[in-house]
Amino acid sequence: MNAEAAQTPDAWSTRWQRFAAATVRGYHRYASWLVSISWRRFILLSLALLIVVAIVHDLPPFTWTVTEQVADTRPRVIRVPSAPTPPKPPAAPQSDRGDRGGEPRVEIQAPRPGEGVEISIGRDGVRIGPRIEDSAHAASAAGASAEQARRAAEAAESASRGLRITLPPGASEAVREALEEARREIEQAAREARREAEEAAREAAQAVREADAARREAEALARELSGEPRMRTRTVRYGIGDVMMQFTLLWIVASAILKFTYKGRMQAEVQAKKASATAEAESLKRQVVEARMAAMQAQVEPHFLFNTLASIDHLIETDPARASQMQKNLIALLRASMPTMREATGQAGANGSGVRELGRELAVIRPYLEILKVRMEERLTTEIAVPDGLLSAEFPPMMIQTLVENAIKHGLEPKAEGGHLRVAAEIVHGKLQVTVADTGLGFGRAATAGTGVGLANIRERLQLLYGPKAALTVTENQPSGTVVTVTVPYKTVEGTT
Image: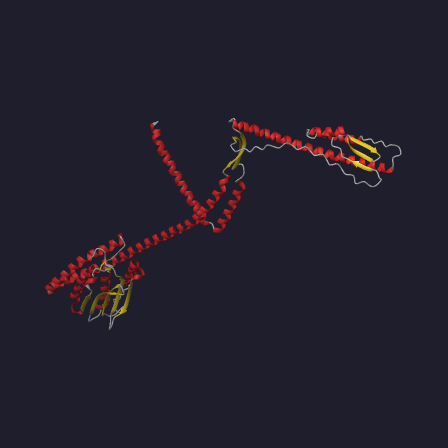
């Protein structure tokens, strides 16, 4: 049991690491896919996604509604309806016949609903109107219910249909016309009374409904005052459809930003890989050049060393003093050149700098020239014109030695009368210029002219170390000979004083 409990955190940690790794892989794959598509395709896909989300965000899988009963805490307004107003009796129609001299007068009064009709014919004319007893009954029934009004209308209609008029003998034609017109007016009054009764019934029904609503309001108010909560039905809409559109817009904006930034990141990574590959190639190239220089130095040094030892052996028998001086110069040369060769190859391989101070390079050149002066005797004269302030300047190793060897081997030594060799250094336009000039046969004119590999290696080393800031120039010297100038940026070696 304890073992399982101890393994649980490790298992969760492993799962989390797997999930994180999978998330990172998915992120890079999605970002790479975004970079691979064009902006036009990205915009079209974004519009299509917005349309799809707008269509499906209200569908049941994403949105649903729930109906529930909740307490109603809203304030209620109770309206008390007014009592229904009884319908007004229609106005009695006025006869268009006035008192016209000598002619019978017809007076008509429209009866109310439920009233009877009384027709009186006398000497003064004809009178048609409600009966006196029915008028009192109708007035008392004006405030009755709608059902009573309807019954009164039916009674009035039946009364109008059952109306009978009996004329006395010898009635004139005017009386008959008056009666016929009275009949028509009675029927019209009955229809109007029926319409008014129906309208009164509708008003009464509306009053009943309003009374029921008022009763319910009163009951609800009574429950509220008694502390009983009111309940109402509420429909609530739930779902993720409301946030889908916002999330989609956020996703599109984030994808656009990722597409823009990740492309720059990929380009930066490609540039970094190219730069790293270029740096590695240049480092390998520099190592190859330094190895070739070391190989050349290894080939020159034994030859020069054997010749010097042979000269010392010869001078021991003929001129011991010169032999002793030559031996001291050889020891100084070996003491100065051995560290130079080791540092040149070691620095190029370790940190790639391949530079040292100019004074240490001259420490190798001076004994070398003294040995050559012993060998060539009066045929060789030398001069080193380097200010003390430039001895701490930075300069690539074994470069001056190579130029001096080429000047003596291919310029001064093949010349019968020999010549003069000058090594100088100066600051020109903020850069260090080191010049090796001889008065020999000239560049490429000797029978022992080389292949130019040494100069090519020097140019390649300068390009690797300084790029376009360094240069190697070869010109003719006057009246004869060659001038080789090496130009490098001027700066002192760190740690020197």
